[in-house]
Image (cartoon, rainbow, N blue to C red):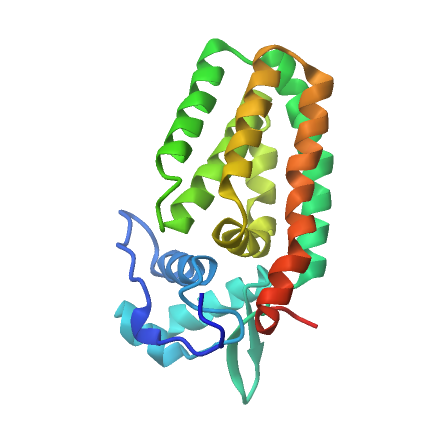
Amino acid sequence: MPKNRNNNIDNLIVLEKEKNESIGDYAVRCIEYNIINMVLYPGVFISEKCISDMLSISRTPIREAFYRLEKLNLIEIYPQKGTMVSLIDANIIEETSFMRKVIEKEIVNIACENHTKEHIELLKNNITEFENNLDSTNFYELLMLDIQFHKILFSIANKDLIYNIILDSIKHFNRFRIFNIMEMDIKRILNEHKKILEYIKNKKTNKALELMEQHLTNVIDDISFIREKFPHYFKN
């Protein structure tokens, strides 16, 4: 992980446009991917022209994408100065973690009672894929597998709508999770997922609730360590 805010816009990862995807949605998805995947580092300034040239689309959808990403706390727009990839805000991380603990403990409570064999297999497959990618440097893929594990739990509880509602609100949090996966022991995540699955499968609700709270609190405990190592990526 570089120790300064300078990164080369030429490293921008250009994703393929999906079928029937609007230009605006495509622009948002590409920029968001590069921000969360730490290709565009916190604090770096980006321009409509550079992004437009890299994605080979006009500047109007890029401008609209910037406004949408600002609402997700991923960028900050300064009139007459420019557009900056937002610094990581520990307050947003803490509030997001609080929200997740409140909601996901209830999700686990329901999952302990409502799961099926098919659900258990989905969680097992997710854990296996995560384990197979432990040595990968594709941290974004590991993040997506972590997110998928929790998404399956919402699905078990038949709360997919709630999951979709909170999806955008955790984007700033997910960017910090990339740091968390890069710098901390990712086997901890794997082992906790395994135990959560075991408790859900055996309907050990109290143990599952206790572990889920710990699982979602770890990221807060890690902030101090990561912030000390990369202070220039965090808001004061």
